[in-house]
Amino acid sequence: MLTKSNKPIRLLPIYGSKEYDAVKKDTVYHTVLDFKLTDQMNHIVTLDTFKHKIFVANFFYATCPGICKKMNMELERATKSFAGNPFIKFVSYTVDPIRDTVAVLANYAKLHDAVPYQWYFLTGDKKEIYNLALKSYFAAVDDSAGNNFVHTQNMALVDTAGHLRGFYSGTDSADVDRMIVDINLLLKEEGLLKK
Picture 1 (cartoon, rainbow, N blue to C red):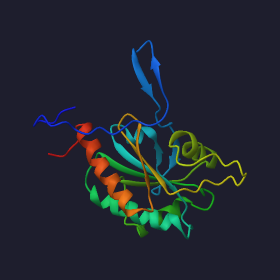
Picture 2 (picture 1 turned 90 degrees about the horizontal axis):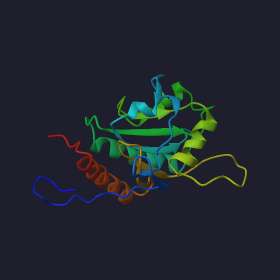
Picture 3 (picture 1 turned 30 degrees about the vertical axis):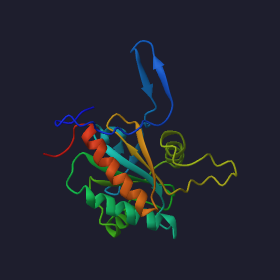
């Protein structure tokens, strides 16, 4: 892909499984699974909410005393880098949906100066959220120890087609800086840069 000045744009890789579709005569890549959850404003959110958008997804819980605090402080910094850009969204899934009610997430969003409709904090069915973490975003490994708890600092960058385009450690400032650069690269690749 070339820019208007005929300089090549560095393309981000596409992660996950891929297979050749003989009917489409093209390679089909892994895409994020659909979901139906509730955000901090008590609105239903599905994958369709992010149609034609680039987004970053992470998993946390509001009472986490460790990595979640650091990760969401870094994510807060990243959201400010894209303030007002309608093509960039941030999605934080709670892994403790029983305690992280809509009201708890609304307070947590305020704590992080989350702009409504830019940074979503989602709660809902625990099984659905864990399935997303394990099989959709590859944000955590399967819990064979039987703790039945997903806890990770990993964040995933998703393009407008639902493909995974990058993984980052949310507790590492340098890695979050790399994510911000990659989001800008993806905006160029997708032709979504603001004029």
